Image 1: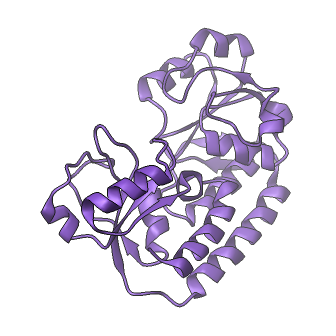
Image 2: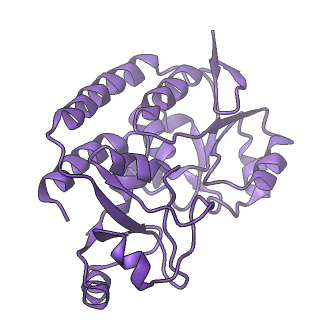
Amino acid sequence: MSFIDALGREHQAAPDARIVSLVPSITELLCHLGLAPQLVGRTGFCIHPAEVVASIAKVGGTKDVNIGKIRALAPTHLVVNIDENEKPTVDALAEFIPNVVVTHPVAPEDNLALARLMGGVFCADAKAEAWCAEFEAELSLLRAMPKPLPQTVLYCIWQDPWMSISGDTYIARMLAEIGWQVPELGSARYPQFEWSDELVAGIDGVLLSTEPYRFTEAHAEALEKQIGKPVRLVDGEMMSWYGSRALAGLRYLRALSSEGL
């Protein structure tokens, strides 16, 4: 049986795979599926579950990896993501890693295909299906909640320069589950923007994410005073990590919807 990745490439089941994961959230998913013994390499940003990944070799970041170190680990499989990893890096690694599994979840329900792809390729089907059943139940609970009036929220991921997200992102589609829409700030998936009266007038509030920029409550308080609109600090992992953490992310969304801006 073959399994299809985000680029339409077929992959066969590989029970003895040696895996390098360059995607923090998928590293966590692989560990959740019981595949940590087959993980031979991870990025320094692959921090969950801490007690498990501590023994897995670090190979650099998501975009700047140590190619020589990865080669020495002799992996059979590389797991990457279209948004998080650079194509030139992946192409260089593909010269000596025979199987490159490409992922690209862009909506909450894409976690189901992701879990089944990882479970299928790496022979953890039963655990993947059990997780999918739990995820589907949690997603149904979220979607059955009464929806508040739609609101427009500016989700900030960086400052100096200020950066946000487009509607064509996983985070935006997570927010859409509770009726929160993001303003379109141009054609980029992660656009830069400048604060202006027009921008502030068009939003109901601001969400400051704890990652990749480490926004804090102090940032939120200062910005709220500056713009005169509600500003809330949100857990970036809950909003942006697909894979096993997305289950907690759905519960986080339910709480966020109940509390409001």
